[in-house]
Amino acid sequence: LLARIRPMRNRLRTMAILSDGVGSRGLRGGRLLACILRHSLDGNSQHSALVRSIGTDCAIPWYRLLFGWMTQGVLDDVHEEFFVTENEPTEKEERKLSGYFMWHKRYTLVEGQIPLCSSGGMMEIITA
Image (tube, rainbow, N blue to C red):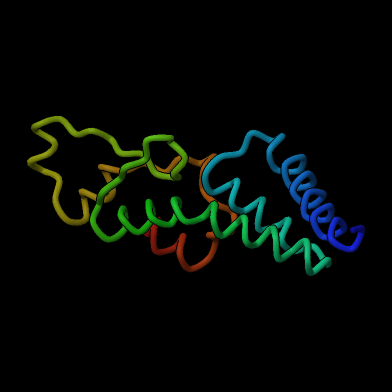
């Protein structure tokens, strides 16, 4: 019986550590994903595997938002967790917005939501 309970106890312990370390900070969006990623870098392989699995599941909606925004210009962020917000243009501005200017005037980066794990290549493309 103890042999069957020990793995479950270890998984619960890992989830408690993760919820205490990440959940208590009130993080959302990209910052939350980055914090989960940092927890997955623990030396304990069982702990890391579980945290990576949780992180992967948490990242799916965020990456769907990123894909829709980058490929189609669609930003459907009902929980306001994405690192970009859409500025609603007036009718006059909408006629002027096209190509280069549409991307630079229509969207604004939210500093507190930029994911730490997205530094480097991806962020250079987004902010260019």
